[in-house]
Each structure stands twice: as C-alpha cells, then as structure tokens.
Length: 234
Length: 234
Image 1 (cartoon, rainbow over the protein chains, first blue to last red):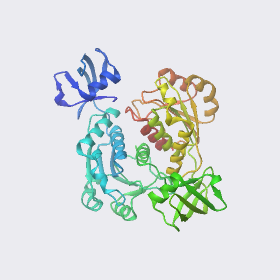
Image 2 (tube, rainbow over the protein chains, first blue to last red):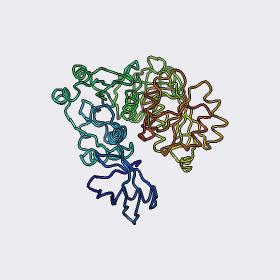
Image 3 (cartoon, one colour):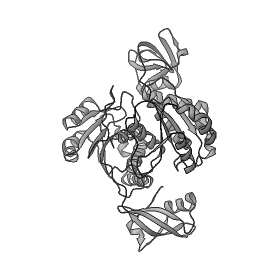
C-alpha cells in the first residue's frame, strides 16, 4: 500500500477516520505515529498527503493537507482472454497499478469456462484487486472492467466501437520480435490465453483491424507477457 | 511446460525414458498418445522434437527426431535486490523464460535478512525455478545465479568485473519516464527492493557507472517492474 485510498464519503471537512485493513496497515505495518505524514488519495479524485492525528487500537484519524492530480492514465485498452483466476487477479492488480483504465476480459476457445464462476472474479473481488493495484501504483481512478464470455458477439458487437480511432495490436508468439515501441496515442492491446488464440480468433481480430505483434518465439506467462508488452508500447 | 527438458544423461542413442513430473505432465496434462510429437530440449544443448513411442502408468519413452539451436539469450545481466522469496521465485521463473543468463541476487538496506534462509532460495529450489522458466520459455541453457548478501563487498569487489563494457542502468521510481528503449549490446540492469535502494546505495551504483532510469512515478511490484523494464530495453 504505497498510497492510502479514501472514499469521498469517508471525508468530513479535512478529516477522515478509518478502520479495518487500511487502519491496520498504518498501525501495524507502517507503524505511523501522530504527526507523521502519509500518502493518500481520494477515490476518483486527487492524490495528496495527510497527517496522522490520532491512533486508536483499531482506527486512525487523518487530516488531509495537500492535493495534486493523480498520475496520467495509460493510453492502453487491454483486451485479455481470461487467464486462470489467480493469474487474472495478479494481472488486474498490475494493470491497475500502471494506470490502465479500460479492461475487457473475454472468452476464447481455450479459456476454461469454469474460470468465469471463480470467487476471485466476482464484481466485489475484481474491485478489491483493482483497489490493491491503485494503492500500489498511487492512483485513484478505478478502471472499468467488462466481462465478455463469448468471443464472437464481443468481436462483432462490442469491439468495433471500443477500438475506433485506436491502433490495434494482438500479441501472438512468433519467430521475430516485432512489437512496436513507444506507440503514440491510444492503443488497444489484445492478449490471448496461455495456449494462444485459435487461427479463427486471430483471423477475426485481423478483420477488425488488429496487427499481429510478437515478443519473439518464447512463450511467456500471461502476467509477464502483459507487463513486457506494456513496457515496450508505452 | 511448453518444452520438455531432458538431461544429457537421460538420453541413450535417440531414446529417453522419463518418470516423475515430466512423465505425469505428458500423461495427464497433455494426454499425449504414442505417435504424438512433443517439443523437447536437451539441457545446455539443442531444442527439437520427439515422438512419444511408449506410455506406461508412470513413465514415457521419447524418440528424439530433430534438433535446432535454442533461442538467442537475452543481453541483460540482472542485478536484483532480493525480494520476498515467493516473489523471487516468480521473478526467477520469468527471467529464465525470457532468456536472461546472468542473475545476481544482492542484499540492500531494506532487504529482510531472513529471506536468504528461505527454503524457496536453496540451491536446489533455485534450480527448480530456473528449469520451470526454461520449460516455459522453451530454452535449454540454465542461467547462473549468484547470491551476494552484503551490498558493499558486492559493489566493491564483484560489480566492476561483472559490468565491464556493459551499459549500466539502475531502475528507481522518478517523476519522468526516462528508461531507454531497445538498448544495443550488453546491459546490466539493477532493480532495487520494493521500498527502493537507499540514497547511499544509489550513490554507490552511480559511482560504478550506472545511470538512474525510471518507468515514472508509479511504484510497481518487483515482478511487474522487471518485466516492463525488460520489455522496454530489449
């Protein structure tokens, strides 16, 4: 937790009283004392600093002091074939931390349908992962996550509007490293399942204006591939 | 396991008989049948394909058929302040998968000394992580991993010889994204602990010819930062 995120309804004037996970973090992990400055952010709003004014056994009081804009969002829209739920959790944390604001989890031929029912992927669980990512990256703006279980209706009905005026890339292992670098403007990045998109799926994405790009012939873990692609594109 | 790795001593003529984890993977996960082609590699040697010639309840027999060179190694030498052992394990898997061959785990002020004694970081555990990474990335050449518990003797005695003729970069969060892209030739990349290198430690690295580089003001998980840096540099 590099930044403590407050909901607007937790703030009264310049004060916020917190209990639960965030209070325990400040009390037990950071071990902050009254007078110490802490990094905070207001969900959907500014980041800033706050002074710890009161420690109790299970709650803390913060006095908000200064505010500035949260870091700039990432220009990437991520379209990700749903990985195993534990992996999906880590990817959601990571992409929220780097500032991606538009995430689409999609079905594909080799995506196990049981993944969609995982307790790690309920609405509230996804929100928790995203908040952890924002706390990690020091951001306040919660990404939107859409789930599209069926590949074909997603590609036909949702995708065209989603990627309009964006450069469109689909990552697929290949012999040559040819993923572009430092792309200007908005980018839609599609990343397939661990076992890859099928040729039909790749074909539909190419029809929708996606370019096939690669980090080389090595097959990487989804988390690792997503992070390497983001490091290269942005 | 995208490629089944064989030890040279497991190969007799063109045949290899496997038991244990790799046999179970072929039997239960892949469900391969006699006649199926599988991707294999010889540790420290070529990659290629093999035909499954025999399935038994707990062993498989492979007939080696074709060979080619393993993928090119990464030009990066990774110098990593030891993260939490579970994180270290995932980083070792990932960097072995992308082809890094020289890994140095180092101590730093905010590295918890107890990490060095973790059962996840014994010689044999590290070997297991590296093999998992090679299987993932389809490589055969096991990276070398050196452990340097003490920062100062590492910087004074080992580092100069290690990074000679390499471009030297130390990643440290900063306001501006200024990590170079597509660096030519060999690169030594130093990545600090989750809580960062101290100013003293950064100073010693700068003295040793390192340039301070950043992915921006966001603080990322070590795994995520390493992958993003590698995506950008290579």
